[in-house]
Amino acid sequence: MAASENICRGKILICQRVVLVLAMEAVSLKSDPMTTPYVNHPRYGNLPIPSEFSFTADEIEKGHWRYSTLRYLSNTAIPADTSKQYFAIYPRSIYVDIEEQCELCGRLFLFYALEQKYWFEKLQFWIDAHCTRCITCRQKNQNVRKMQKCYQELMKKVIKTERETTQLKAVTLELYQLGYIKDTGKINHMS
Ligand SMILES: [Zn+2]
Image (tube, rainbow, N blue to C red; front, top):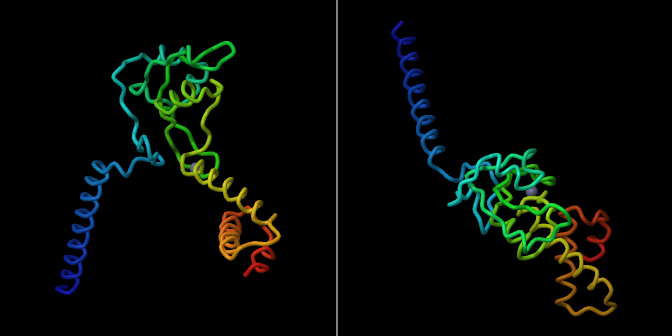
C-alpha cells in the first residue's frame, strides 16, 4: 500500500515537473522570435515588418490583381512608385508582405514589401513576377550556377594546375552531393 502510494507520489511529482517544463517552454515559445514559421532572410529577418502606413484590405487588394488570392499581412503595406515599374497594363500600387511556400523545400517564407520595392523599382523586374523560392534555396541555386560554370571551365582545361585539380574535385563533390551530378564515376575517376 505504502509502496504504491510512494510510486503514485513519484508519478505525480514527475507529472508536476513535466507540466512545469512544458509551461516554461510555452513561455519561451511565446517570447522567442526564433519560433516564427518563416525562413530567415539575411536582410529582412523572419517576422513581418510593420509599416507606418495603414491601408484597408480593400485598398490592398486593389493594389495588384493577385493580392485577393494570396495570404498577406495587411499592417505591412507600403505605397509603390508605379512610375519606376515595368508593366504592360496594370502596375502594382501597393507592396505588402506576402506569405509564400517555397516550391523547393516546402517551408514558409515572407516575400517582403521592401524586397518587392527593390525587385520592381530598382531591378525593374516584370511586375507580375513573384517569388517562388525561399532565400536559402535561391542562394543555393546561385551557388550551384557558379559551381556548374566553374566545373565546366575546369573540365575543358586539358592541363590543370594542382590548385585547379583540387578545386575541380571539391566542386564535383559538392555538385554530386546536391544531386546535380548523377554519375559517381566522375567522382571516383578523380580521387
Ligand atoms: Zn526553400
